[in-house]
Image (tube, rainbow, N blue to C red; front, top):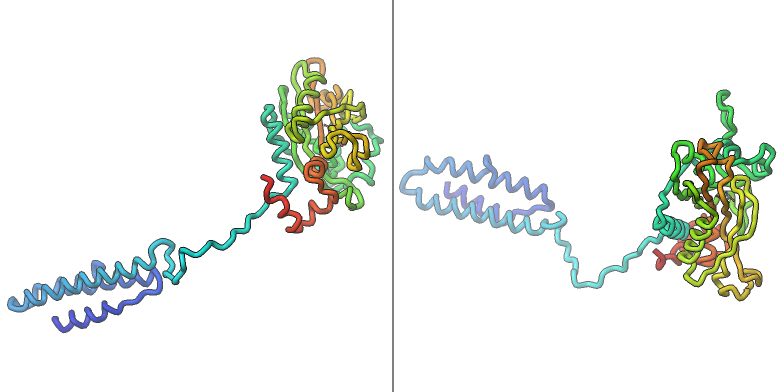
Length: 344
Ligand code: DAH
């Protein structure tokens, strides 16, 4: 038995393990319940009395040694389970390359943030919509030019049962209808999303872009409420010095309708090539929700009134960051995207 223990002592001395699994196998082999050392312990009672002291000592030595060796190997795998590879922890770290948020996401989040602080919640709707939600419910006449093939992408539906034309939504105003359909006032929502128009792609037009729609309906909502919300938005987005100007306009779904300009944030309103010398730049459309739109969507226009507004996220982004080619937003050139690393 002594000879066997001596042999095992030498064996244990040079134990090697390449990974944690191998180490565990070794532990079980030597120190496990049914391991070699426990077997020897069981045999101990058969050792002649005069050798018991000597064998006992050797056996304890073997057990301690095996335990120490396994612990030593274990320390190498501590932490992430990988073998220590001579890595120099005092070395300067490799520079970390941070990803950047897309400029449109940055600006969309800023818009959401400004409206959220005024109590607006986010609503979303489908990009593939029916004619009703994009046009009819919003008071577009049957022959309105926006319904023309030249502006709108139509989706072919091979289903006899589908009566309504299916289109790619041309504006996020469709989400107004989706919301009003199943919610009674008060309604206070913003609807960010992608929209599609059948345009030739150039530096100033694309076949898809992004909008944020805003809608507030309650009792006694007035144009003054709209104006205050717009002023607050413009000043939070473009700085406290920003002025706004509302010009009468026309949209089928609002009456009265207006377009909003802000004082040019590049020249501060003095006039520059960017604002074509006028000192003003247009940023959004808005107005009081047309009673027909309320009625079309199941809301009593004698009790409730509301305002709506809609803006292009690309437009706001261009103004904030002076991006002068719309195509940059969808080409995913990392050199362009990395310019927004400092923005949040
Ligand atoms: N839907 C309009 C567009 O795509 C933008 C718009 C204008 C939305 C006026 C509105 C609004 O809610 O009141 O050009």
